[in-house]
Amino acid sequence: MPGGLRASERPSYGGTLREEIDAGESEAQISRLVFETLTEIDGRGEVRPLLAETWERDASMRRWKFHLRSGVRFHDGTPLTPVSAVGALYVRIHPDIHDGTPFATQNLVAELVNADDDWRLTPTSDGLQIETPSPETDLPATLAQRKYILIRHSKETDAGTGPFKIERWDVMKHAVLAANLEYWGGRPFLDAIDAEMGRTARDRMIDLEVGKAEVIELPAEMARRAGDEKIRVETTPAHDLLAVIFPPGRAASDNARLREALSRAIDRAGIVNLVLQKQGEAAAGWLPQWVSGIEFLFADPGGVEAARSLVKDMSHPSLVLGYDSVDALQQGVAERIAVNAREAGIALTASPIVAPAAGARPEHPKYDVRVVRVSLRSPLPRQALVGLLADFATVVGGEKIGLPDSESAEEIYAREKAVIETYRVVPIAHLPRVYGLGPRVRNWAIPAGAAMNGLPLADVWLEREAQ
Image 1 (cartoon, helix red, strand yellow):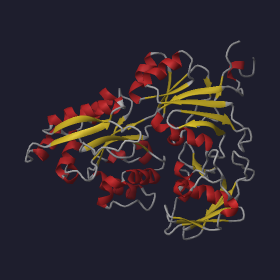
Image 2 (cartoon, one colour; image 1 turned 90 degrees about the vertical axis):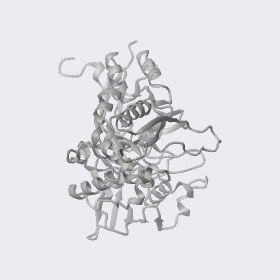
Image 3 (cartoon, rainbow, N blue to C red; image 1 turned 135 degrees about the vertical axis):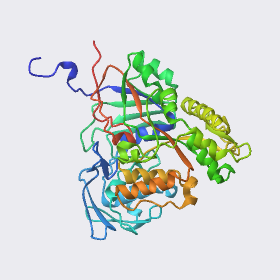
Image 4 (tube, helix red, strand yellow; image 1 turned 60 degrees about the vertical axis):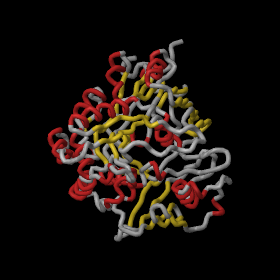
């Protein structure tokens, strides 16, 4: 085809994309395909309009007005109005107030108080006004987080405004999404997405190789193996934090020297090279370098000799390190940390944490510390740090670290440094998300920030199968 695209390269509508993803991340992966926020963060880390076309603030930065995009409808056909936008945002943040009855905008009062963020939400003639108790210099960026999706509840299903709508949803098991043909941004290329959750990583690779799936999510440590098997591999920037936490209420959490000793004993580079197969970055800070721009300022906390000097006066220090029993990556990391700790004089035992059966009462935790993996909420430094502080609030709350009040690199660095030096949350590595793609997948592009909120599949299309 001189002067044009080959037929196989021209976008085409139709087809069902079969996807196999991790059950634990299923909501994050799917939610942004169905639900939208007032704003979004693009691949360059800049705030862009989404359901709100424009916005402005007063001089105090406490009163913001957002002007809604016209012509937007929820999947059930209900138009997005100022009143329904206030209600959809409010109910999302407070799901406990939803009693299962159909969402009725006529029953909403004109003014609602958001107790979670201490905001006051008020409908305006063409949008909504948000009043905050203190100046919010970056409220549009905050509203781009998945927490602030607009969702309309009903007895049948939850409706959003996104390019896909829910056809079937079996939590942690299976989801089917259908194209929203009336989407305000233009219908997606795909007719549907069929997402299977919870299959093992090896089974996902087999399904991709035999054509039973077009997109699979893989553990970071399997990226090299997948490449060796000629699978097309795509990775995101590192945006998951792998860490060890000292939960409150244990003797170990009150021993500052022991916490610091374990942090210094961990061979982060060895974990990245051996356990993660070089898919990730050793973490000195909570935020990766590409987000904060200042992680290089944090010194490598490693050092067996420094760890030994901290524990030399302790009487046979010992710890039990818990890890998720179904997570092979956490197990490998925990076992490696156990080796590092013993070299430093800490008797550390890695122990699996088994989730209780449905309906069973959880047992009292039998570990002193545990391995966790937490996803960043934003590619912007302040929002990312605020999100992690919220995730670890029960662990570091007693230290009264506080939240950064501005976007200045100096303040963000000071807050991050202060919480790291408590050694209650010990960063180990920053991990990317890894995906294997089938040969029919076209136009796959995930901007760095977009990957934090799910896969942007509205522009992906499938090459037609040969007849």
